[in-house]
Amino acid sequence: MLVHLRLTVPTDLSEEVTALLETHAGVANLVVLPGACRDPRGDLIECDAARESAGELLETLDDMTLADRGGIVISRPSSTPFRRADELEERSPGEADDAVIWDEVLNTAESASRSTISYYLFLVMATILAAVAVITDSSVLVVGAMVVSPDFAPVAALCTGVIFARGRLVRRSATLLVTSFVVAIATVAGLGLIARLTQLVTSADVTHPRPQTAFIWHPDRWSFVVALIAGAVGVFAMSTDKATAMVGVFISVTTVPAAGNLALGMAVWSRAEMAGSAAQLGINLAGMVLAGSVTLAVQRLGWHHLVHGKHRLFGRPS
Image 1: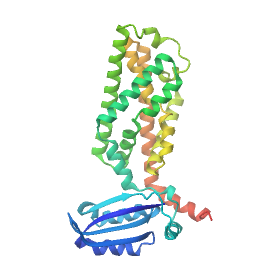
Image 2: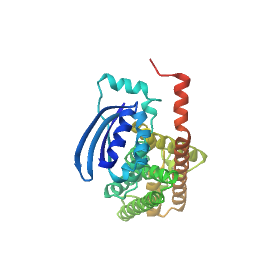
Image 3: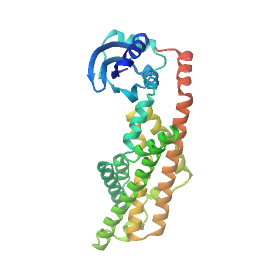
């Protein structure tokens, strides 16, 4: 698996960057276009690199101040059907699937911490869906609400900010989490109050026995265990670019269902429902942040050694 690097390099850095890429065992298809860049003035340099080597290369380029003075763009070819691509994979330590490109992780976290209208709308709609699941006692709708919800992204961004000591990222992520859930719960509580006043929803619809969805507002020790596992898996999937594994996180944690139940509890003023839902929401968020931060810390400190140890122990598949 290769990544493509497109570098905008100031003239005085071009020779140093070119020498790095020319001598690196994980780089192929090096192209240098002298004087092609106008802002900043300099050269355009492109190359393909094994994903396993990309993180190290980017750290070196950062040390050269290219990230501050020039430009770095990472893209992923849909396929690389040429022999040298396989040779790069063979020469590069570890496996592409295990590689972590920390610049990508930070960039993803920065994007996830931004407050956008679409994020709020998705969370509100997911919370509405969760509220309907509560009223109809539908576990299928609960799963649907979990999948629709976008709330894990700022959780992962918060973990990233903690581990990389990015105070601004931590503040933005935490603010987005708090304000978005407040808005979603307030919106659904308002809609629930309207539904109650029009007799579309009654207090009994929320407080009656619900065998399929009672877990939403009945947290126990397993709620925290699941949140820990989900937080670890979610952050690990984000850092290693395993998007399909993220779906499992979305359908395992009870944040949005708890928010929907809390909103309905407010609408019918059921203190038991409100207290249980608030506890469930808090337990899940706390567990995910804790486990996600620990997972990133372990990856940051020891992942490189683990990957190389695996390579020495088991070798590469033939």
